[in-house]
Length: 594
Ligand SMILES: [Fe+2]
Image (cartoon, rainbow, N blue to C red; front, side, top):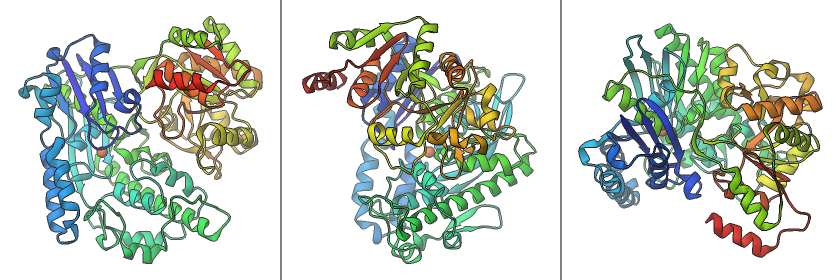
């Protein structure tokens, strides 16, 4: 049975294909269209999924959309009318949006793919998040929490899931919290207030929080009130996101916290103003963590289960996840590589397979690599045409050479096998460097990633060596599998791991099992033999404002446009010839990528 899952029209569209109960492909539209955060109907992603499986749309038994558009319509209409007359300006835009593509999804999918309308199915947004979290996790029974900004009405749900010995699957939702009361909206309101992009830059708030102290926690608590049933309510006097798309916080919010940050001015942490913003980030971060911990503790008490699956965009908060592991009572926490809305494509397809059609439970590989594969020979061809140094090496020689490059302080673009699904590069489309010095961090920030200096880089370490360098609690390696937890770097190693140690001594470490990415694992070991420290800095292979690279040509284009020294794809290793690239050549590459 072939089931296609689609998530679209909010941010970061994606498609995923499940064949006979097993995912065969999942990819975000942005990685193919090359528009970061592409929210369009994911035609390219769908095409890529069908191509990988070698099937035509007629062979699809079902196409599942990840939420119910009419319920969403109901929410937007209700909230807009409730907020009238303040919402009168936003009303035409909201209606146009919803009455455009979103509300008529069945017809749109049917006409795009040429499948009959009866084959188009819908799951609820938080059902998709729950399925993406639970059905991709190697656990038979788990409690489930999903939390995001908003789906149709739900913003947070708690429940459980069970894969029974007879092959049937059950996912239950016990309770939900509904819009406008939303942990995701609370956090993204602060994201906007702190001058970052909502739905995109929430991780910058988390990074900034490490520089501050939670001195404004009492103020943040005025915004969110816990209720006797264990839920919470936002005090809507401080917000405007429920009445207008233009501003998420109200004048009362500004009276409470002071002037918002000008997004065009850098944050200077040496000034009182810069410190106020860091304190503000630390305060909302702590309230988010406290609220999640209390909700999870109650769910642990209620279910008596040892495993927790976390879904929704809030699950990208690695600091909160680590606190959940430490304090909620759950022994293992599973966060999928794509807990946000893109991941709902795979969640919707699996939910439909297991629950709607009642197909038997199936195990499948526990990795994030569900996208298209990179072609090393394509890289060799392009590089040779341009006169750059290209060589084809055997596996062993390539790993030794790359370890030498890294030990010599070179920056390596590393492309391998299938593209990661989700926002994080986990070793198949990564920029790798030595992790030892702040100079390397600054070099990456200034010459390649062009990003704020307060943002930390992440390390990758083989599972066998993880405990030597990082203070990872029991159950923590599971969170660290997909970089979903932030843990302390052991104090004795911090001076040797400066480029990946955040200001508070922590790191968003990826703990790598050999089976997940064998070549990267071998590279880490080889690097460890040279330096005594089998740890590398691993950051996503992209430039600021661009999606992570997918094909060899995109890796090559990125390599030419920044100061990456070595590019590896499959068995091909490319270095720049000594002369600077001519601008016409750069132009040609840009055209080829486009
Ligand atoms: Fe969501």
